[in-house]
Length: 572
Image 1 (cartoon, helix red, strand yellow):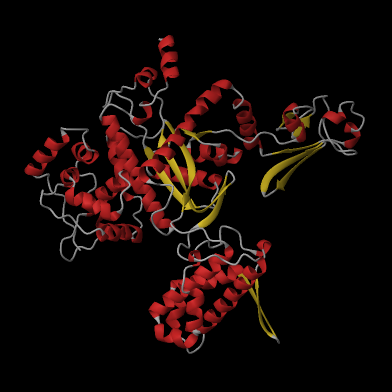
Image 2 (cartoon, helix red, strand yellow):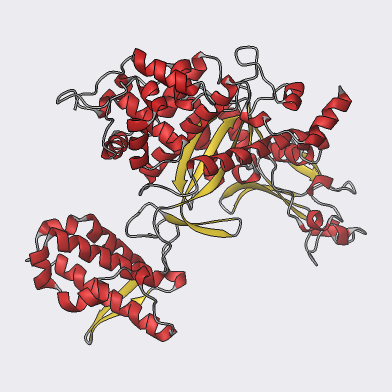
C-alpha cells in the first residue's frame, strides 16, 4: 500500500480551527504543526511500507496520530474518532473538514509494521534529531535515569491457574486450526467441561489436597495432548503452532514425568526445582512477561528505564515560574532515551545499554544522575573510560563488621601502598600476604597480616574477630578501589547530597508518564510492542513539555512551593 504524502493545511480548515482555538488554550496538535511542521516524513518509514498498491494513509501522519493518542491516553477507536471529528487533528494532519478519517484497525496495522521492521524507536529518533538541530537537546550537560515496573496486559496467575489456562489456550488453538483431528485425539466432551471456561471464571477447590490433585490432572492431560500432537499420524504442522510450543515449554518448566513398568507417573516440580525467573513463563498469552520483584513489590510484566535531560536552570526563573522561550530561555527537560526489559532484568544490567543508546543518538551527558541500583565501582570506572560520562550516584557502604558497628578499625584505617603491594595497619605493622583472587565472580586482592603480629596486639579486639589468625583485608583492583573509596567519602558531604538531589526529579517524570499516558499498564502483548508503546508515550510527553515551553510555562517550574518562593525572595 503506497503511502500518500502530507498535505498542506487547507485554508478553510485552518480558518475554522484557529477561530475555534481562539476561545481557549491553543491545542497541542495545532501547536505541534505550527512549530514543527511535518514532523515525520514518509520517507523515514519507507522500509515498512510497500511502494505498490492503492494509496493509503501517510505513515508520518499515522505516527503523529499515535503520539497524540498517547498524549490523551485514548484507545484506537477513540483516536480514530478524534481524527474524524476533532478540528485540531484535522489541522495538524492537513485534512479537509469533510475528510472521513480512517478505520481504527489502521493504527494496529501501523504499529505491527513498525515492530516487524524493527522501527520501534524511529519516532523518538526523528524527534530528537529535529530538536538537536534547534539546540533543545545536546550532548554533555546533565541527564538522569530511573526505572519503574510495568504490568503486562495479562492476568496474574498462580501455578494451578497457569497450568489450566495454558492447556485451555492450546485446546482453543487446536479447535480452530484442526477441529477434525482434535475430535479423534482427545475426549472432547469430557475436556470441554474441564477446559471450556477460563480459569478465572470459577473458584479452585479450597482443599490443598484437591488443588494438588487438580494440578496432576492438568499435568497428565497436558502430556497426553503433547503425545497426540507428536504422534506419527498427526499433521506435522500442528507441532509448530505457537500455542503448542508454549504448552510444551510450560510443561517442561512445571512438571516431571517418569516412565516405569507400572506406567507413566506425573509429578509437579517443587519450588526449588523450578527454572530461574528469567526463563519461567508467566502467561500463555504473553510469553515475554516475567515475574518481577522491586522494593518488596511483586508484579508480572516488564520494566521501563527513562532517561531525561536535567540541566540546571536559572534560580530566579524557578521562583517566578516564568521562562522566555527561544534561544535565551532554558530548554525544557526532555526524554532522551527509553529502554524496556522484562521484569527480571536488574538496573545494574542496564547501565551500559542505556549509555550505548544515548551514544547512538549523540546525546551522552557529561554527568549522569542514577540511584544506587544502577551503580557499582566497576560501572563508574567503565562508564568514565568507555563513554566519558561521570556517574553521580551513591555506592554501597563498607559492609565489614567494624564499619557496620561504627567502632574499631575498618578498611579505611589501613594505609595501602599499591606500588609496594603492601598494607600498613593503624599501629604501623605491615602485611605479609598480597594475592590476586576471585571472590563471588569478581576480581579482588586479598591482604593478610601475620598471626604472630596480630596475636599480641593490644587493640586486636577492635581489628578482627578471628581468635587465632591475623587480620585479612579484601580489596578490589586499584583503579576500582580508589574510585569506590572516593565515592564513599564524597557522598557523605552535604554539598554532594544537595547536588545529587537533582536525581529526584525523574520521579516526577515517571509519575507524569503514568498519569498522562497510562504507562504503568501495558496495552499490548509482547516485549517489542510494549517497548513501542513506551517510545510513543515518551514522544507524547516530550511534545507536551515542548508545548508548555513554547507557551512560556515549563512543566517543571509551574509548581514551586511557597516556602521556596519565600527563601528565594530573602536571598534576593
